[in-house]
Image (cartoon, rainbow, N blue to C red; front, side, top):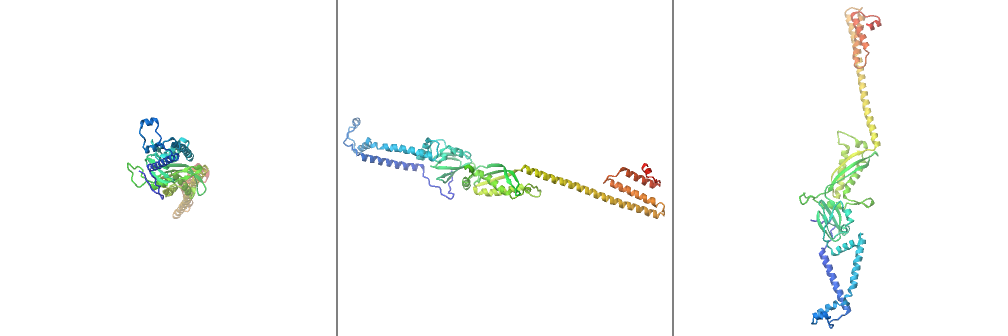
Length: 451
C-alpha cells in the first residue's frame, strides 16, 4: 500500500514501462522498414528475370511470385550492405551513451554503466533479489548501488518500522511503508525514516549564566515522528502521519564539511540551543538554590525547556516524548569558591549560636545577681525589724551581720550554677553564719579559716 499526496505540488504522471517500451519498439521498427525500403530503392535491383541459384532452383522448380521476388531483392547483398553503417553507428552510440552515463553519474566502471543503461532502455527492473534498504545504512549503501545513486527501475524492500520517501525529477513522488516495491524509472529514494521512538543524549554541554559563570550539563531526549490518528493493529504497527513524514524527510541542514544534518539530530540541537538561552537568564545562585516551599530551579528550567522544544519541533513533524537535564558540573574554581562560601556561612552560624548562648548565660548571671542583692536587702531589713520589735539594741549588730551572711551564702549558691565559685568561700560563709548563730564569732580571720 502506498500513499500519494501532493504536498503543495502534484506528482508527475508516470506511464507504465510496458507502454513506453511498446511505443519505442514500434517507432524503431517503422524506421528500420523505411530505411530498408529506401536502400532497395537506391540500388534499383530487379531480380524478376534472374533465375534462382542452382541449389534453390532444384528445390523450387517453378517461378517465384512477384511478392517473393521483392523479398529476394530486399535481402540482396547490395541492399544489406547499407546496414553496416547502421550497425556500427548503433554500437558506437551505445558505447558513447555508456561512457556518458558513467561520467554523468560518477559510476565506478563501464560495465555498471552498461547495466544501468540497459535497465533504462528496457524500463523494467531486472529479475533477482530486491535490494534491502535500512535507515541506518542508507547513505553508506548509496555509494555502492546504482539503484540508490541514480534511481529506478529496480526492486527495493523497506524493512519493518521504516518508511521511504521517493522523488521523481527532483520533486516529491510518494511514500513507501514497509514492504517490497518496484521503483519507476529515475524514481530516487530521498530518505528512509524510522517510525520507532529514537533516543539521543549529549554530555558536557557548555552553558553560561547571567553572571558570566560557565558550567556544563547532560541532556537526554526521547522522540519520534508524529504518529497518525489510526489505532495500532496487527497489520498496522506504526500508524503514519503523511504530513509529519514529509516534513521530517525534508528537515535537513547542511553543516560543516558538507555533512547533512537529518531529522534525527534536530531535537537534540534544538534542545541545546533553547537551554542555552534559558540559562543565560538565570544567575548561578538561583540555579543552585534549594527551597522546600517551591519547585527546584532545575525542575522549573527543565519544564520550560520541554515546553519550548516541543513547540519548536511540532512544525517539523517530530513529537518530543521526554526530555531530561542532569549532572550539573561546575568548574573546579567555582566549586572551591562555593565550598568556601558554604564554610563561611556555617562558621558564621556557629559563631552566632555561641554568641547567643553566651549572651543568655550573662543575662542569667545578671538576673541571679540582682535576685541575690534583693534577697540580701530583704534579709537585712527582716533582721532589723526583728531586733527593733524585740527591744534588743545590743544584739542588732549580730542579727544584721547574721542576715547579711545568710544572704551572701544564698547568693553564692545561686551563682555557683552559672559561674564558678571557690569552694572555700562557701565553707567560710557557712562557718561565720554558724558562729553568729551561737554567739561564738571570733575576731581573728585566721582563726575563722582554721575553724
